[in-house]
Image (cartoon, rainbow, N blue to C red; front, side, top):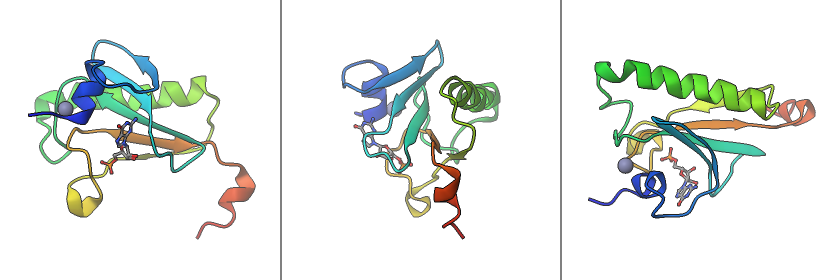
Length: 113
Ligand code: 5GP
Ligand code: ZN
């Protein structure tokens, strides 16, 4: 089985890597939907939030704290964190990932409903 995000994690496929530690990698989304759009990805292959095991609760926590730390480092002071789950939930890559999207100006947000 080939998995795009496993290939990035194993550095077989190029990506703009922002941060990595022993369990998590962060890289830029190739088609950004926000001024800052990063993907927080566990190094271990897990398909989605729907299949993640309770035993990986610490890993999930690490992903959230990593998102917080990267946002702080980059001075992104307002952002969205998003897991798409399953095709009907908009998930296209079957390797769990947390979207970090931000970097908008406040005036850009005023147009939002
Ligand atoms: P999903 O829809 O599965 O939640 O999000 C997958 C994300 O991965 C999309 O935002 C898409 O732009 C991004 N993506 C797809 N292929 C690549 C790739 O080869 N490299 C990087 N860095 N991002 C990718
Ligand atoms: Zn994978």
